[in-house]
Length: 219
Image (cartoon, rainbow, N blue to C red; front, top):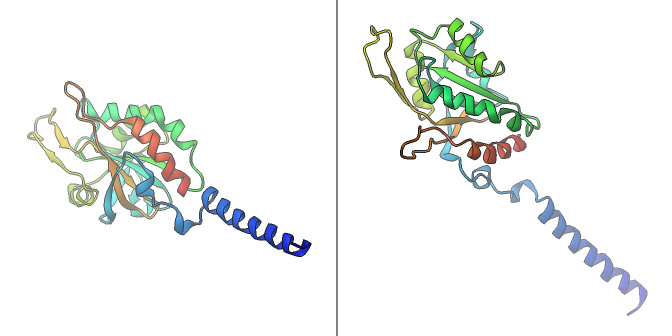
């Protein structure tokens, strides 16, 4: 085989090897697995859900709308500040892993949103004091029930007043999942609470530590 043929063979092999490495090491976007197949624990909804249009008041006594969710990945939790167990435990657990989660932020920030469904007691002042106890970077907000009910439903969550609200110590039943909202402001899934006998039903932070970085790296 003359020299020109050898050069052609080597060039062809180099081309094939280059294509192979490009596909296996850095596959084109159309060949990458969708995020729903990359995560191991998050429960994905069949399709992204648009949130009900809302106007709330946050812990800084400022208006909060759907626009405040755009451009961020958001982990949202529905509850209330007088909650005796699930709410404080979940927020404290998220705060513990928060520094580790935000290390994985690329171009799209992560925000933590506590949505109070107890507007009668959870004033902006109380929300501010409550959320800053956990982390000053977290967001807390609430609004009237005509805003909250459709918003919470559109998240795939629920809440209900289980007692007469004339009782100062009334309780509120609410979902305990951590909801995932994408940078378009759409709900895409949730981390469900663990139901272990004798233990509080809260989401597993190891599951968040495994899956949330995958979301953040995708932008």
